[in-house]
Image 1 (cartoon, rainbow, N blue to C red):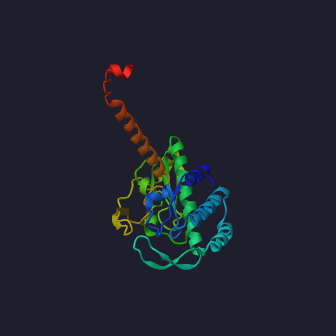
Image 2: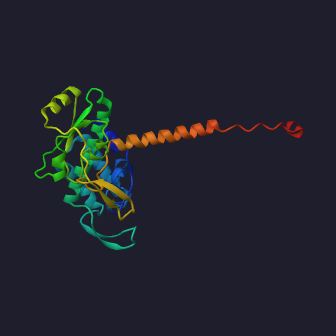
Length: 266
C-alpha cells in the first residue's frame, strides 16, 4: 500500500456514529467511523485492524480472522438492541458480521487508495496531466459508470472533484494517469470522451442531519466527493483563516500609551 494512502488514513480523527449517515460524504475523508460502533474501545479496535490491514497489505480473510474474535469478545457481534441517540428509540440493529467486515474492508481500502493516488496525481500532473476513467473487475457495472468509461480529462477538471472513484458501495472503477502525448494519441482515435458529461443532479436529503445535497446521477449519496482532495481543501481553508487572523491583528491600530502617573513611578 502506498505511503500516501496510509498517511491519509492515520490523519483521520475518530467519531462514533449510530447510522452511516451521521458522518456523511466528505466528512469520511477526515473522520474514521463505523455505524453502530458507539463505544470508543470497539471503534479503536476496528481502526487499529484497518490500519494494520492497509499497512501490511492484508487480504480480507486475514483481516477478518484477526478482527472478528476481538469484536466477538467485546460483544460487538450479531444483533442487539441499541439506543438511537437521535430519536431516543431503542431497536434491534446489526453489529459485527462477515458481511459488515467485508464492507469495512473494501470501503477503507478503496478510499485510502483513492486518496493516496490523488496525492500522487497532484505531485506528478506536470508530466502526466490527464486522467482516464476506467471500469474495474466487477461482474456487473452501473449503467452510468459504463457511460463514464473512457472519459479522458485534465487532472484539474472539476469533474474529478465529484466523480473520482469509488462512486458507490462496491464500486471498483478506477482512473489511470496519462501523459499529454498519450492523451493526444488516445484522443486521435475518437474512442474517448474529452468533455465532462452533463448528467442530472438529483436532490438528496440526509434525514439524519437535514443536509440537502445535489448528487450527480449514477453516484450513490455519500460518495460524490474526492477522498484525497478534501484534506487538501481543508488545509487551504485553515491556512487562509490563519492568514486572515494575522492580517487583522497587524492591521489593528495600536493604542497610544498613557503617560505614567507620578505615583506609579515611585
